[in-house]
Length: 92
Image (cartoon, helix red, strand yellow):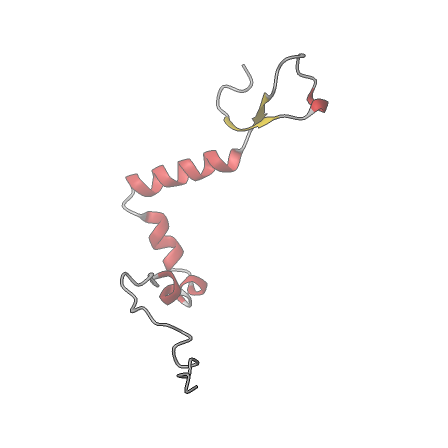
């Protein structure tokens, strides 16, 4: 079974795929080794106390942008009406 360890990412609906009449789609088999690499790296990172996080943050290129990595979306932003100063009272 060549597709035993793969991720099914899509279904083809093309008429060129050669599926049987009456079928509307077929599974597209793809072997994405980078997904397996990410899984292995995540497991290594988990079992070795964030070793990949420490490794990445020891790189001077990553250190130069660490403040951007810590940036967060504000939880409460005061609402402002951007057009309030443009509105003039009618003195008709």
